Length: 173
Image 1 (tube, rainbow, N blue to C red):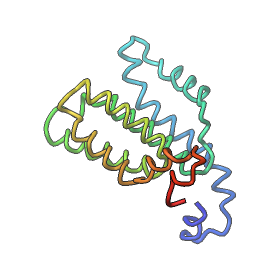
Image 2 (cartoon, helix red, strand yellow; image 1 turned 90 degrees about the vertical axis):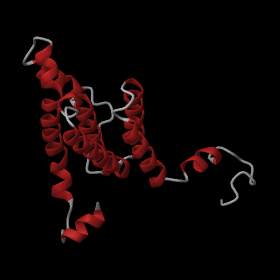
Image 3 (cartoon, one colour; image 1 turned 120 degrees about the vertical axis):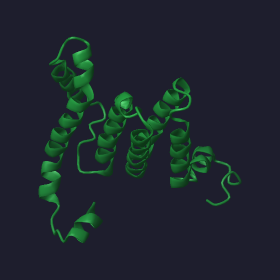
């Protein structure tokens, strides 16, 4: 964040860091409206999205609203889930399905760059959806798997040797 501030020519990031949680929660409310409103109408409770948004914001157990890449990742994860839930309107014809998959792929790339563990959660959800709907999401699942492996190729090596006390386990350390 400091590098972005220097590129923008800002000397002090304190005002941005001060208002970032408030602005992020307002943007998150817009995403929650988009995410929860159709489901509330289907249940016969048209204003039920208010209640869902309140519980979502109160139950925000990760509290990733400070000025960090994780807060952007949390926002992108919510957008990714919103896109997955609203897939019926996108998968009507070939052009919109292609654009939908490109949009999901771009959101996933941004999510992987900002917060790696959130992208793993998104990959698991996409994998479950690909098992449920066989042909629709297999290529997207493969693409997202390649993005995760390409972004951090040493993750398996790191986790396999992190708790070892043997010096020969990790020859690069």
